[in-house]
Length: 198
Ligand SMILES: N[C@@H](CCC(=O)N[C@@H](CS)C(=O)NCC(=O)O)C(=O)O
Image (cartoon, protein in one colour):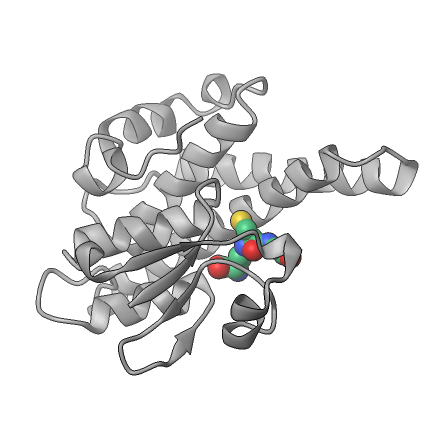
């Protein structure tokens, strides 16, 4: 398998954490890609010009991260990352959606923050920050469990990205229980081995 990859992307981290949890990571060749430059080989696989994008051994190009993670979960045997029983399944999928929303908002703020500021952009950045803050409050109230699944991996990647790109905006004081959960969950091999660097 081939993964169009950007080291700083929290969505790529989520995919790699799932690959490690499913013991599939050694079958993945990483192709370092800058999606903002729209390289032709990425566009041929993903017309949205986004990473992560996984090309399977059959040549099928898959995006975005929820689809790739579910594909990895369908390969081989192992404890499912997408729980099958309805209660656990909907909780994990809601956590994934919440975490993906945090990552979307935080990545957009990061990109906007690198550009010259103007009123509309500043308002959009404030809106994205409020979305992140509200979703953190939801996760603080409705704490993830300790098992490794698509929900907890996604939440771990979202919180890791906030630390990576927004270390100057500490989130822990408002979410101390979530902070304790994150510290413990960060010791899972799939999280420890994919922690953002640099
Ligand atoms: N919903 C997508 C989001 C992926 C995404 O936003 N990737 C960013 C990098 S972190 C990207 O490729 N951005 C390039 C662009 O939007 O043009 C997923 O879950 O994979």
